[in-house]
Each structure stands twice: as structure tokens, then as C-alpha cells.
Image (cartoon, rainbow, N blue to C red; front, side, top):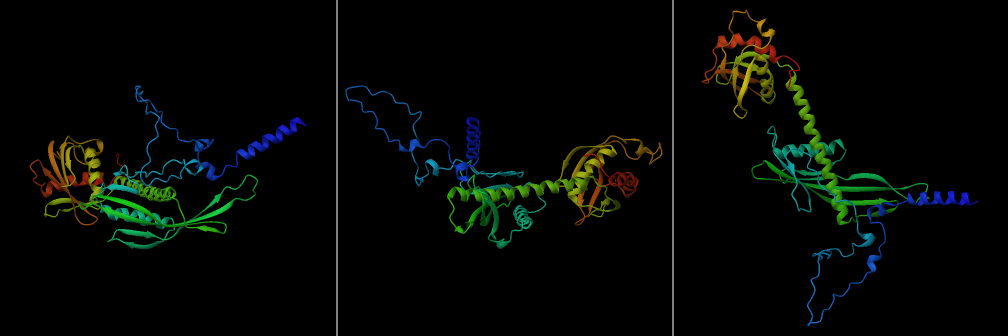
Amino acid sequence: MNKTLAIASSVAIVALAGCTSQIDRKTASGSYKYLKTEKQEELKIPSDLDKPAFSREFALPELGDGVNEELVGKTLPVQSPALVLPLVSGSHIEEGTNTATIWFDQVDDSQPLSEAIWNSLLSYLDENGIGVDSFDPEARVLITDWMVVKQDIDGPWYSILDEESEIGRRFEFNLNVKPHGRSAALSVDLKDYMKSIGNDVTAQVTELDERREEVSVLNQVVGHYEYQIRLEQTRRIARIRKGIQTEMGFNADGEPAYVVESQYDIVWPRMLLVLRKLGFNVKDLDKSNGLLFVTYSGPQGDWWNDLFSSDEKLLDKGDYRLKVAKAGDSRTSVTFMDNESTPFEANQVSDLYEAFAEVMSEDNLDI
């Protein structure tokens, strides 16, 4: 009989221990007897005695203006604070701000920063089936349609079914762009809120829960932005490693050059791989002007020697310069020059063409 009672008691204790509600998980555990503690009067010292030095080590800080004095005991949430996560390269947050805001700095010049942020936000909304109520690029404001999520609410341990809650939210996104256009802050505000539990519907939300909602959706947008950047980097590396066709032609100044069938941002990094395999060492470079300063150390590998007879001197060892420039939306010109920036003659360009075109067309060059 005693064993049966012990087992039954143990099962009851385990069941009761596992029935903590969401409210219990958001509040401090333990006793709240401290709420009944009365303020003690400061020790009064007679005027004819020396006043001892009192330590302020455990003194409670003074309450600031506008503090909600009802947030004590079980009404005081103890959840970890909602923090904006600056996952994107060049992003950061400002300390001390109470708004859900993240700053982005321009790290990719392929498109304006504001355009990149809006495109990422619209992509996030589209992938998650969230409509756009209004979007004004000039005013830099976007208001979403209702985001509706359903979640189960823990009921008592003896309940067979948990209640289902439905939460709807609408957010307003604001983009603050610096005059120079290379820094921008994306902020989010909870515009509308509605929660239903069974037949009960409320549009009230606490200030803390409001911030958690704003930070949560902003972190999802930032995470999507960071994923898109990584995905684009992966695709870009694949394009750089893929072989590109080349033909002989002329640059914008009418000088003999190679015309590569790809965009400048792909050809520029691939040139470093091609030149290395052709026996050139890059000493310096200036991407903004498309200049490469190189030293030719001689042919690298037997494959080069197979292209020409052993007594044929393709190029003298020494210093050279290359000019890489856009030749339209999807083509790039490459001009070989001597150390004084004098372009190669047509016959020199022709002599180098076979070796240059072969390496440029190779797949999976080492990065």
C-alpha cells in the first residue's frame, strides 16, 4: 500500500512540475514575500555623536521618470532582452536606442544601398507570402499587410487539448539614408496588433512585447538579407571560375585588345587567376581605374611550351601594365601595355591571343 501511494505521489509531482504555463516561464520563480517588505527608516544619530560611514554598495537605484511602478513580482517579465542582430557585413547598431533599428554601410557598389535594402525586404515578404499594403520609395516607407501566425498555448496538465492562439501584426518599415547615400538605417514599428485566444480578441500589447515583435521581424529581414548576399557570393565565385570566351578586338580608344564575353566585375578577379597561370606576378592593382601592374617571369608549365616552338620568344621578361575596362553591359576589354603605358601593337596582341584565350576559357581555375 505504501509503495502504491509513493508511486502515485511521484507521478502527481512530475505532472505538476511539467505544467508550467507560458506566464510562469516569463516571470521570476520563488517567493514574492519581498513585496510586503516595508521601507526602513534611516538610522538616526544624535547630534553629539559622530555619524558612521554607511556603505552604498547594496543601495537600490532611484527610479527614473516614466517608470512603470507596477512591474514588480509576477508582473515583472524576466525574459532576455530582444536584441537586433547585425549579421550583414557592414551593418551595426547604435547603443542606447530603444527602437528596432539597424544601420547598413555600402560594401557592394553594384547597386545603390537603398535599392539593395528595399529589394531584400520585398524579397523576404514575397517568399513568406506577406503582402504589401503600401510602398512609397520617395518617402522611404513601406507598410506590410497583416502577418498572421498561429501558435499553441499550453493549457493545464490535465487538459487534453491546448488552446490555439492567432496573432496578426502589421509593420511599418522606414529607411533613413544619409545624404552621401552610403549609409542607411532600417527601422521597424509595430503599426497594428491583434491576438485571439478562442473567442477572446485583444488589440492590446505591452511595450516590452511590442519591442520583441519589432526586433523579431527585423532580425528575420536581416537574416534574409545576409542569406541573399552569401548566395550571390557563391554564384559569383562560380561565374569567376567558369571559362569565358575571348576574341580579338579593340578597346574604347581603338587600340588592339582582347574582348572578354563577361561583365567587368567577373573579368577583373578572373584576370588575377589567368595572369598567375600565364606567368605574371601582380605587383599592384587599382580596380577603380582597371589597372594591373605586373611582372612577367616566363612561361609556366609544359602546356605553354606546346603552343610555340622552343626557339620562339613570346614575351620578354619584365614589367608590364594591363588596362581592364567595360566594353558594354556584358563585355570587357583587356589591353596589354608596356611599363610606360604604351599599348601593344596588333601583332603582339595576336601572338599572345592563343595562350590568353585558352587560359581564360578554362573551367575551375584555382582561387
